[in-house]
Length: 159
Image 1: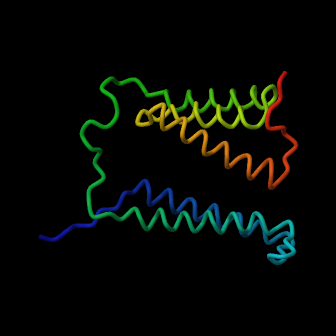
Image 2: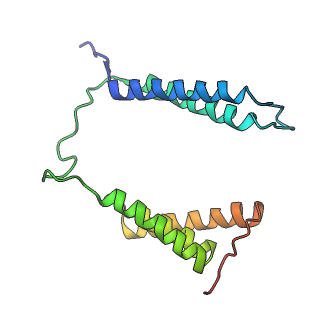
């Protein structure tokens, strides 16, 4: 039996659009001094991000070719015709919790809250998984932002 390759057109066009935007960012970054890795200029960051975006777009466009059809699996989605707003609502609530807790509670509670609330937006996540992810991301945030970058946001703030 011969396996027929299909093209997922949305992924193909999305990848191509990302490549174009990445190349545009690289071109825009060349208007500034790029510099070297040890002495980066103002054009280095947009050029590097543009290169990563273009590479990601190429990978998405290449992965658009698959050996199986892209029809949705049975049971995916939900039975009623209303849009599922749980994910978007959890992300917005997580951002609001981060803003509130970042101001009144500090980095650790704010990071835990945004990751925990946002993780609950995925129906496949359990509360245990959301807590484990939140603890891990909070530890990473402490190491990266508080210890390594010395961000001027205290770990805990009361009031």
